[in-house]
Length: 196
Image (cartoon, rainbow, N blue to C red):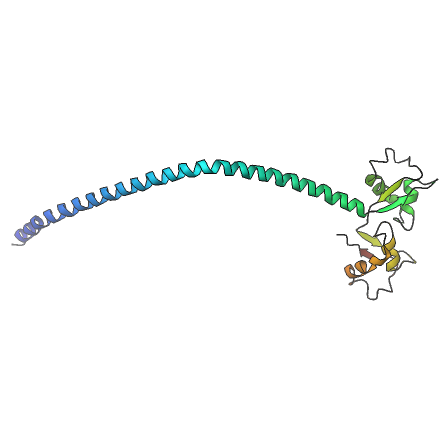
């Protein structure tokens, strides 16, 4: 009896399964057609966008080239501005680079003469030959060691610092951890010299 009922149930389910399978294939076919249509539309849109993309790529390349040129020009201008801010020293009879570098208002250290040489290579072909009335750039120092007799206004006035005594507050502000009172600085203190 159980076998007969099982066979009847199977016989009744076969048409339902076949119908369900046919519906699924039809749905799948319809969905496949819809997806193929969407794919065709997407490919057409991609082709359209690619034609718009080429001029944009060319424009981006041109802008990158201009940006690169502007960066190079900016670097040159920054260097020129830095040099414009350097102190200047007018050579007198009997000067040589080491002597200039050793002057109190320059570096107070004759060994720093190469800094002056490097900043003036366009003018100085031989570091042993400099001539009266030449005006030499004196590159700034990033740090300064106090020597006896210094005070902030004097330090700021040095050609290797700011060439301007009134800029002493900049040194004070950058070194407040070392300077408790701007009227009192001591030999061998090392100050940071800020430059914009």
